[in-house]
Image (cartoon, rainbow, N blue to C red; front, side, top):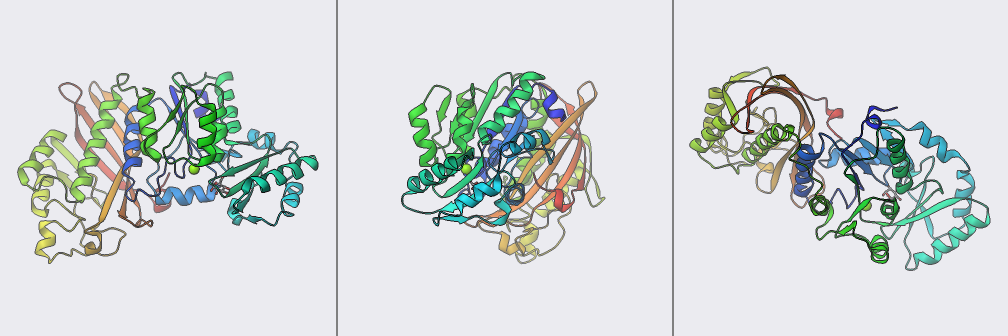
Length: 453
Ligand code: GLC
Ligand code: MG
């Protein structure tokens, strides 16, 4: 049994992806990355993140390389029909769904309805047959399909989502039934999540998540009619109708139900120190930190020990002084076209290597969006932190490790630039109060194909 199922989590978040965790209208994914920081600092130490999507594993990976998703602890794909932990499908769940499921017979019946158009091949799964249904009166076709399937003695679950997607699943399957299966394993093992479970969704295939006994629910503001109607008819005080779309709504709901728990662990302070450094590096990269040497120097003094050493992934070794000098000579915007060096070089630094800076090193100007000048203006290099872990070395001294991911997003464009990632290891030393400073930082590149959730 997977490790994850053997520890009792404090809290479990189960979220749909498209238009729930991911707001496809938010070009730079600000709200998603704000959720990521909250999750990484206040939840990841003791809680489980579960993504539950209608997408096949193939389309999930496509999404995960396009948008800044965290790596989930558990991935539920294909409308609850595939449960994956560390990329490994749960064989017990598969066997459970096989019972009484006659895929070919169900497909044969659906084929008789001309309104149903087969979806792409990747979305046809062992326990999921998917169609597009684009008609003015979907209820008529849904009714006919359900009664034909029943008349043939086939026990199926027909789910309509987003006003056009129709999935035929075994009656034993849905996002909700997959969640119940997982919760049963916790119940009979280490115990149910202590502080509870919250499900989040926007469309028809999410309804069954809200039906799981005892769960809290978050309906995002941009929810479709199917879920909206259901919530209206079944409202109770554990369901929260968010006022914000997608990940903004999830963030809102976590606070509404008071699920964050920062008081608990002092790991929160170390995680915050890492995230704060990243946030500064991102601002620096995009030319939005205060544009003067004194502010930069103050930032360096606050975040880094006097004897700080930094080994960049190229092998270059730097001290705090080297780094401060480097910031001063290079200016405050490596990617947004605002740096002193860029001005001196006529505004386009092309492929000139960016020497080294925590959280920025190795990212060449305008990475992935073509030339440096193309990245300036509306382009923004986004960074996020994932897979943080740590161990204590001595009193007040910790070794931390995390993945740093970088991707340029261009406002108004749905296609993002190429992603890069690095592993970072750092020694963090405690100061007055709960402040931590970097004593040492070492970075090395992550192979391209591993730079995603
Ligand atoms: C996702 C899947 C699709 C499914 C839909 C609704 O978009 O890719 O196959 O029909 O979710 O569940
Ligand atoms: Mg959705």
